Length: 346
Image 1 (cartoon, rainbow, N blue to C red):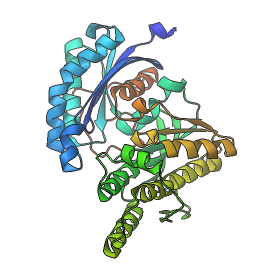
Image 2 (image 1 turned 180 degrees about the vertical axis):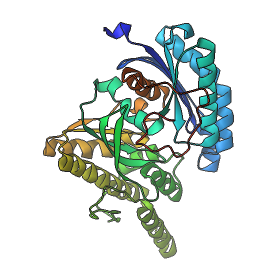
Image 3 (image 1 turned 180 degrees about the horizontal axis):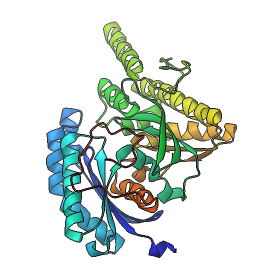
């Protein structure tokens, strides 16, 4: 079967504050569009679920239209609908799933409720082609920091470790607030760190050598807060660039060390890094170095595909359809804590 004969999958993503729609055939991204409500959350220093849900409602139809236009296809050309069923914010997920059900009914096409986290891994195939089996995936985002053994995207994903408190992206946001940097905190900390000396401060490495693949960044966040408080008490100016660099150095050191160790222990030669924090320059640089030294192939999607988007959901939908898995029923429910071991919801 040629790529042109593969089913056209429409993917809808609304797990947090981005309304994403993508169109995929196999491993080819035909078109996509994203509408973000992040600016509406800035003054609150974090995502407000009710605001995000309302924004999804307003953005859904025009975002679908823009995605179709960018792909040069009509809605009637779509062969199946994939939608994020979880994990995510309850109200936000409900908007996406409701829209997907409506499109599936109107078009008389199959509906697939899929896992947001596995979608972050599947999107790499749109950049680098089919994922070798097995692969290790390091998922780093605002709400999740996980190490996964991916034997098959559609049917066999195993969690090796997860965050026990703050996710990496969450820690970035909280530290940015301590340093009076904008929300979301990832990009401004990354930019400030490039001017700083990462060795000027030694911040702790959470769960550094505990023999697990779990992560912890709450203690690191607290250490930064204490450093800021001590400087304020002594009347010393904050060297924001140095603090940002030292904080970031601690985060990426732990992330890359555990990811490479997981590859070595499981005899896996491919590491995928995905999620919003995968766009971080220091993480990419250190991961490239450590993977090269260990003889591991590193795959990281381009930054636009790392953040939440509909293309990743369409990509996972394409895998689920190719695997011949049964579609979801129209009573598909959302699951705010859908486990990563369930690529297909329900």
